[in-house]
Amino acid sequence: MKDVLIRSVFGALFLMVVFTPFVYDVRNGGNIMNMVFYVFTMLGTHELFEMSKKSSFKNNLKAPALLLVTALFMPLLIQTASQFFPLLYNPVWDFILQTPLIFVLWGILILSILVMSYWIFKREKIDFVFKNTFLFNFFYPLLPMWILACAYTFSNGETKTLLLIVLLPIYLNDTLAYVCGRLFGKTPLIPSVSPKKTREGFIGGLIGAALVMLAILYFTDQFTKANALAIVGVSVLASILATLGDLFESKLKRSIAIKDSGNILPGHGGILDRIDAMLFVAPVLYVLLALIIS
Image (tube, rainbow, N blue to C red; front, side):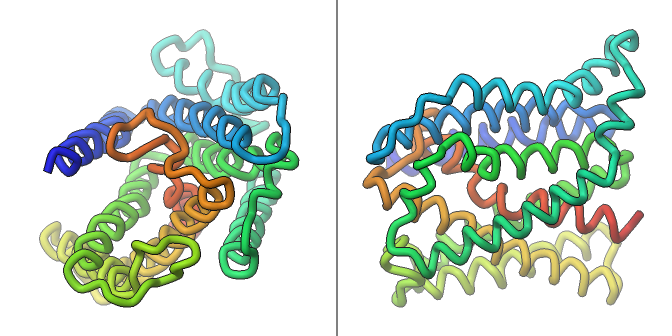
């Protein structure tokens, strides 16, 4: 009971950290979420290099990796700060960050997610990624978080609300999959990767997330046939990608025989344990939806 309480409290605090800046940004046209994305990426990079110490490979490039994260996020952080300190604004950053290169990197990200998903099913162990942790860190977690931050920064207030549509199914799927798994779970999903995950939990999370999103659509007077089909499609895709993201991190930890990526969040583990699903879902779907409605 105590463990459930601790997990619930810190889970709620985590969601507050994510959604409070988001609400501010939507209401005031800001980009405070960039600070969240940056901090998550820095912590994720730190955890990844700490995890590499449990592997049979030596990696001594954590400081350069953290500097790379800061260098890539710096233009975005300057844009964020310019809302409060207009003298910091420089249109050069707009030009740099809105070039077609972003879409090329988005394509590379999708390809890397497909490769990592392939490893889940076809590789017994994936600790080989720690042969070059600096390079792996670029694809996981730096590239997903940076692309998401770039797309978010140059979205208007209405488009920014898409982040909520992308993130909600992740947390709904996680919660409902856990509940359905505990109540009805009998058949392991992929026992060699995550013994506690069940097919019943996966199906319950997927269907449950879609139903809750439909209910939200209905009670906010946005329910139309087109909107319903769109929200179900987004929810289902988000649930599938979220599950793959969770399984990938589980396999990564299992490959080096650790339980959590860190201990920053009591009851949850490390920051990578909390954003593993988000890394596979958020940048892919947010950019896709932003392109569709633009």
